[in-house]
Image (cartoon, rainbow, N blue to C red):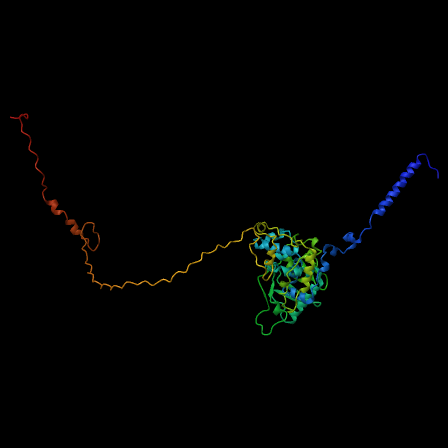
Length: 446
């Protein structure tokens, strides 16, 4: 090959570039597959939930005990409760909002999930979930990780209640069996009723029981917020959006529902749950209280999962702080002892004022009281005999003067008053004699 003048310099330059690139390629380490993008090498759910691998599944008996208090709720309300349970922080915030005097008209303007807004329209249900945050959190965890098992448990409980003769249609709810699945729908087109019952009696029945097994409080309005329903044996909880093919109860209610974009929106077509609820810890002792259906069930597997999650997430606060300026100003919300007694059933550690910025009260020593000698009874002077009562003279009537000013009808005599002064008026008036005149003569003295 013929090299042109100056070509040797160009060839040397090209060779240097090739050698540098090869050396740089050898210096780069091979990429670790674990460091690849989650979208390429990991399941999306696992990428969002690093603790999912340590989550302990609930057994069927455990699910029955957890779901027993709400398994007989009407389907549209039950669907909203299960989704809202995956947002326990927002449940707590919504409860504070309503307890603090928040208006029901302002619920739609809050930055909560659509399911939490729906439940907030039914305060009795919202307060029940807020007062049992351990139970609510466990319910959300079960639905996120075992949605099919949750639906199976609900159907099993409804079948038990029907077999016990305690679940049947009435003026407040319609109970239907379609294709082997139990549906519970509201009867009235504008009102929905929340059932109240004792799970220990309703699912097994009791001989000699007198009275209804299920009672109902006041009715709550049916609104556009009830936009979820159950597709038993199919998709489970789904969004129907008050349009197209409506469930039978929604057909009756549709003419009375005011549609708005807060709840009827295409972005809700894919039901969203909060998978971060799997990272929250719960007090297992509070879960053990829910044993009305299966008495011997304990949640030790949940406690193990909590311990593993705690070891992996030391120092991380799982709860999102609530934006409540009044609470933030008056209470130290970062104090972990708040969760010991607020929002959980049962007793927890007692809250003290230590560590709250106030000095502990110091008890002042009390002076030792000296023993006093017993008081001696004093001698009382002899009692004097009481003097005999003296007879008092009877009061004599006093004669009232008869004057011109006495105008009392019993003593006033007009004729007598007119005769007064007659004698003095008839007598001649005596006047004094005039003084003697002085003598005449110019007044000269003799």
